[in-house]
Amino acid sequence: MSTVLFLSCRKDPAAPVGTVGPTPLMLDLPQWVLDSIGPMPMPVDNPLTVEGVALGRRLFHEKMLSDDGTMSCASCHLQEHGFSDPDAFSTGTDGSVGDRNAMAVINLGWSENLFWDGRRHSLEGQAHDPVTNPIEMRNTWPTVVDRLQNDPLYPDLFQAAFGTSAVDSDLVVMAIAQFERTMVSFDSRFDRFYYGGDSSALDQMELDGMALFERHCTQCHDLGLFTDDDLRNNGLPFPVTDSGLAAVTGLSTDLYKFKVPTLRNISMTAPYMHDSRFPTLFDVVTFYGGHVDANSPNVDTTNLTGLLHLPNGNFTWEEKDRLIAFLNTLTDSTFLTDARFTAP
Image (cartoon, rainbow, N blue to C red; front, top):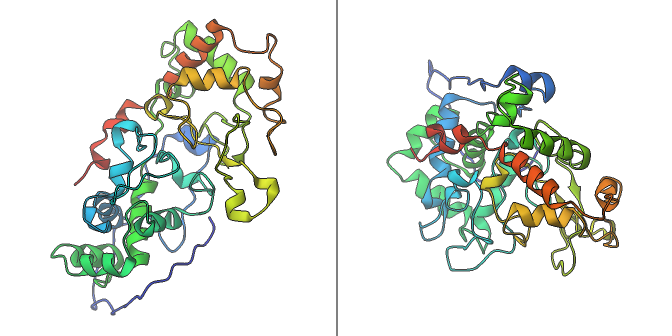
């Protein structure tokens, strides 16, 4: 994954002689994930450790990261909603309302494009931004570091995870990134059917929906991760006031391109699209089945060709029901209730 540089004031006192380092942690991934998706890419300077993940879990739920101590990462990424936000736009500590829906934190260890506009390329980078965002946590890194350094608990946790009790912003985001890499979701009914060989896991309506999905949707939401991790203009009807990737690159050819989100746990992550314009999956399926704006600048007509030329110009009611039935099979109830991801 791409290297991301952070600015911080790091003190690195030498670890005492004989100090035992952190305990390496191996992700327990199903064999089919390793075979069809591949091992999760791991930065050489931030491997998973038991102590690092435990620290990251605590920091993910830590409200000291926000300016007034009322907001944590988990405030906008709720586990029961696939670590997304059921509100259209998250509210910052001062009452400011964001301009994009909070994306789900699911299987991001395989992602090289983070945020809707793809502005970060590692989980370390992704974890860095919300702390100082004026419409999110509204804090400064020196303040966060000072709070954690003077907390009776954190210096020892940083010592155990990174071999130093001196807190800095790099280590904070490295710990959060470690925790987020463990947030993997591969235990849906679809998985048990498609990869596990359980022929009873899906009924006929869901199987029909899967056939429709494979025909019309896997160009961007390939089976496995259910995202190609790219940024595309999917032809949302105007008004689209957010320029997406173009705001990062400055290129007109990137106008209205946004990250393709994963569809895993999609029934739990409403509302949909970067601007939350669709409250239900029915609205989403209706949009793709006859309402894609083929004239939008940079619209991805290649991947949307099948949807732009449906036999009747749109999905039938039966087809919509079947697609939604299939999408509901992507819910991983174990992930949504896994105690390893709750507040410690």
